[in-house]
Length: 174
Image 1: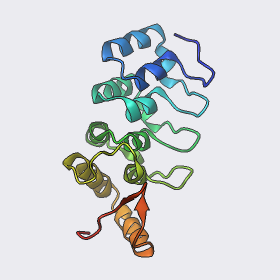
Image 2: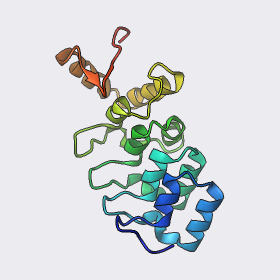
Image 3: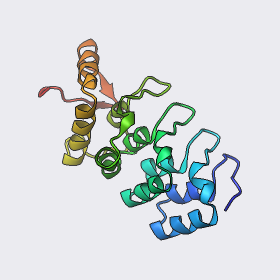
C-alpha cells in the first residue's frame, strides 16, 4: 500500500482512477493515512485523480475531509482539483467543489494558460454539450469568474469559426 509504481502512483491513485467503492478507498487510507498528500511524478494527487475519474462525488468529499489543504494542490502543469473535474466532465464533482468548498481555483490558469472552464469546453468526456448538467456547470464557472465571459467573447470574435475538439460552439444566444 505504501509502494509507488514506476509513475510514482500508489494503489490509492489506481483505485480512484478505476472507480473503486468508497469502502475500499477508506481501507486504503487506513493502511496509509499519508497517501492523501502523495504526488506522483506528474504532481498529481489522489484528489486530482478522483476529481477527473471517479463517478462518486462522495469519494471526493471524503478525500477533502481528510485534508482540506489538498484542494490547493497543483500538479506540475498547474492544474487544480477543479481543472481535473472539468477535464473529466464530472458535473457532480464540479458542483460539489463550488457549493461546499467555494472552488477558489476557478480563476487559476494552468501552465497552458487554461482556466478550468477551458478544459470543460475541450473535454472529450462531454457527451451532450446541450445537456442540463453541462450547461449548469458552465454557468457555475462563468458566474464564479465573470471575467471568463469577456475571454470567451474575445476568443469567439477573433475566431468566429473556431472549433473545440472538432465540435462547433454555439454562440447564437450569448
